[in-house]
Image (cartoon, rainbow, N blue to C red; front, side):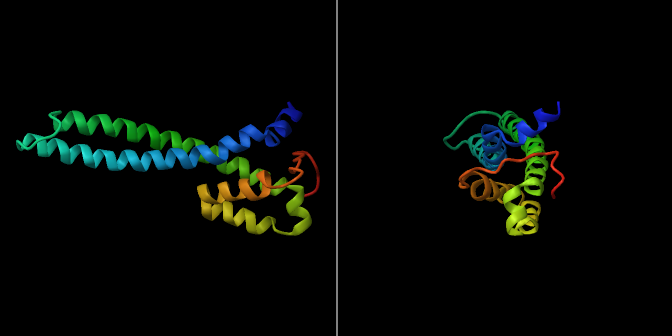
Length: 141
């Protein structure tokens, strides 16, 4: 069990997923939000007798609202998991201990949230050669 947590912190695929998926879901949620308004206005326009889709206002609004709510909840939960994962990663990253940049990266992750996480992943994990090996149970902070 102890080494499983360490292997999770060093898993490259998991790092990429946790850096990219919350931002992608956020963008999809924004598009869905604008889709709600587009469907509302197009259904109102169709009910007034103009050309367009003939779906009812309630059907168009509810269908897009369900998608939006699903994306918001999914984005929230993946964002929280990603946030905790990368905070722990930044605290235990041996490259940041040597260069004294740990506090700056933690602040950028906290205040930049999704974009800060993506930037941290890109510059401190993806572009590093060799990639940092995180030992969760190492005494150095």
